[in-house]
Structure formats: C-alpha cells, structure tokens
Image 1 (cartoon, helix red, strand yellow):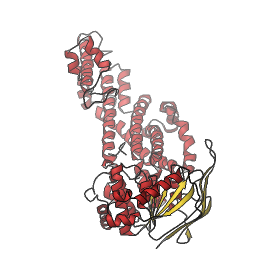
Image 2 (image 1 turned 45 degrees about the vertical axis):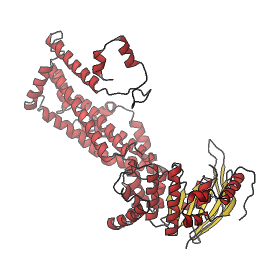
Image 3 (image 1 turned 90 degrees about the vertical axis):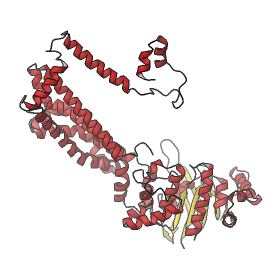
Length: 288
Length: 265
C-alpha cells in the first residue's frame, strides 16, 4: 500500500484499511506491526512542511523577525559562508566546533574503549571505574559545565574536557556491555585451541564486542555534539553555538534558523558516517 | 597413544539463591585409551556436558582425579580439541580463518595454516567455501567448520559436546558417517556426547549410559556397529539390524528406569 494509492481513493473504507487489518498479500506476514515503506509519506511530509513555512512567510502572516522566509535563510547561508559573523565565517565557526567534538571523541575512543573492555574482563577495573562513571553519568553535562569553566576557563581545553566527559560514559559502558555479548563457548573455544588470556581478549572479546563498541561511538558522538553546541552558547569565542547565540542577541533571526539547520545537518552526517562504519566493520551484526 | 583417566570424580555445584546444591557428577571413573570412541548417552541434566568440561579442563572436580598421560589436567589446552554444540564460530572471520584460528593463535605463518585448514575443509566437504562469511552458512555447514577447526590444530583428543544436536535428521546421519570416517583416518581419541540412542549405538566403541541427579554411569557397553559400517557403508541397514534394535531397547529400558543397575566398572 503506497501513498499514491491512498490519495487516489480517499474513501472512508480505504482509510480504515490503512489503520485496520485484513489478509495480506503473499510475501507479507499477517499482523506484523508497521509493515510497508514509509519513504513516500516522509518525503511528502517534508515538502508540505517547507511549503507551509514558505507560504506563511510569503503571505506575511508572521513577521520575519519571528519567522524569516526560507529564501532569506539560504541567502544568509551564502553570505556568511564568505563574510565574518560574530568573529568568524560560517566555515570558521563550523571548523572550531568540529575540532572540539572530534578532539574529544578521539580522546574518548582511546580511553573509554580500553577502560570499558577492562571493566568487562576484570573485576578490579570494574570496581574502580564503576562508582565514578555511575556517579557522573546521569548528571546533564550542563550541570557540571560551570565547574569546568571555574577550573579551566572558556577555551578549547574546557570545551573538549566537557565533551569528553559526555562522550566517555556511554562509550565505556557500551564497550563493557559488548564484552558480555560474547558467548562463553566462543571464549572456551579459544582457550581449548591453546589461546593465552591476552589472545582471548584481543582475538575474541575485543572483536566480538565491536557491535556494542560502535553503538557506543554512535551514541557518544551524538551526545558530544549536543553538549558542544550547548557549551558554546554559555561561553565561547567561536563555534556554531556561539554564532547562533550572538545572532539571537542581535535578533538576526535568519542566522539563528540557518545555524539550527547547519547543526542538524552535521548531526545527521555524523549518524550517516557511523552507520556506514557499522556496515563496513561489523557486517555480521545481528546475524549470528 | 594417549590415556585419559578419571578416578572417582565428583562435581558438586554449590547452592545459589535460587537452587540448592547440585551433585552433577557422582563417582565417575572412566579410562579412555588410544583411539577409543567413547559416547556418553543420557537425558538432559545427567551431567554429560559437565563431564566433558572436566576433560576439557574448564571445570576442576570437587573431588577425584582427572589424569592425562598420568598428569593432572589443570586447564584447557591445544591437546584436547573441543567441538561445541552451538558451533562457537567467530562471525568476523571467514570460513578458512575460523578453521585456521588455532594455528593463528600458535603463530603459524599464513601460508602453512591456510594449507592445513584447506586440507581439513576438503575433508569436511567445504573446499568451495574458503572465503565465505560463516554467518551465511547453514547449521550443518557451520558445524562442519567447527569440526574442521578442531582437526586443524591436530589435537590427540576430540571432545564433542552434542555436535549434531542442532542439525536436522538427514544432515545428522551424513555427519555421523563423516565423523566416523575422520576418526578412522586420524586415529584420534574421541569423547562424544549425544542424547540420540541410535547415534550413540551406531558410533561408539564404548557407550556409557548416564543418569541424572546425581549424574552417574549406569552401564557401559562395548560395541562394534561402526566396524560393520566401515565394511558395508550402509548405515541404515545397520541401524535396523536385530542386534542393534536389541541394544537400543535395552538402553531405553535402562534409561526409563525399568532395569537400573549401576555399573561398577
């Protein structure tokens, strides 16, 4: 049942068919929740929302101060790409933000993954790292942001530390959970083939934990990006969050909206990248 | 020629919050020598897998001795290959990498380990699947990779924990013949666990019938139906021989408790 067949015959009976149930066509399974493609509907929704936005601003029902038109947002994008706004060009702001988030992400990868694995395979590591991680993990990063400013100031070191802390917990805990996802038979198999403990950790546990490690990285980079933009809004000299906040202070609403789109687009690209890595690194995920 | 000896082995799992103490194995004594093919038969929960885990070195007995070449077993080792019930393959490695995993751990060079692995993959009939991802194989093929992997490390002893339990009936019969042929070829000592009475009688040189709570040996049989298979290569008619059916009936009676006699041997 595609979207087009739905709009061609808009009878009450067809409407019931979409939400109700009946025997299915061969190849589909009866009772499976939410089957069928939703792409066409999603595209239609997006187009409708953009059209509504454009139409409302075109009819001047809402002042541009509150809702700028799509065209003015695009124009601002092109303009700020070349010209400085709040101390840097758009690319300049994006670069500062990406440097901070990837810097923290990299530091978290090289520390959180080994620590998470160590927590999974060793009770002493688990005993040491469990209390601090479980203590700070539920605190929103903005809750301890003031403390990082007191300790480290407002430069990149403070930003990277804050993001690092936000990324570290989900990555460490997912790596630790990954250790548990390996079957005891896989480990005993390696030992019965003469593996040393180090070989078991490297060749079985680390590789078997990869799906969860990558999930942790995916969650981590999402957390990191959210935290970064918020942190840049509190105190910063450059960065996309800083750009958006400066624009808001001067009521340049089209830059605010443009900044929000850029933040969203980058977050989406991160997710695409992680999904791509997932497919390349663990094609076997969920298949055994 | 290796000797694996268990003397009055007892395994008692301590009580937990949910269950009381479990006497998993009681006074188990067996001696397995040379190229014996010993099959342990019994219902679920009779301690078969525990017994295998003791031989593999995964579990230390509560009391009693486990000796390999007169030396106590103090952990798993490459001299005892294990074939697991659920294949235990590593999905991030392809077929030949899984097969040569043991040699990789021993740091054998790539060329040599691929040669050895290829040899055993041919034995189990997977010569056309070297680069195949293991997660795309059927259950029977995965089990054959598991068998080839255990053989590639060339252990003296093969411990097989219900290796055919997860297979369909037809594949299972083919695999029984394959394992017997490999055993005759390699002259390894085999300890094989099953809960299929036919499989046990067909394959064993020695069959031990086990009983649960506490896990113990009820009776031991010395059998030679495998020899008739090597002569006639007709498994089905062997499995319908009158003698075969007699043994089967007797074992089923023992298991069902009509004729409980604890074997003292």
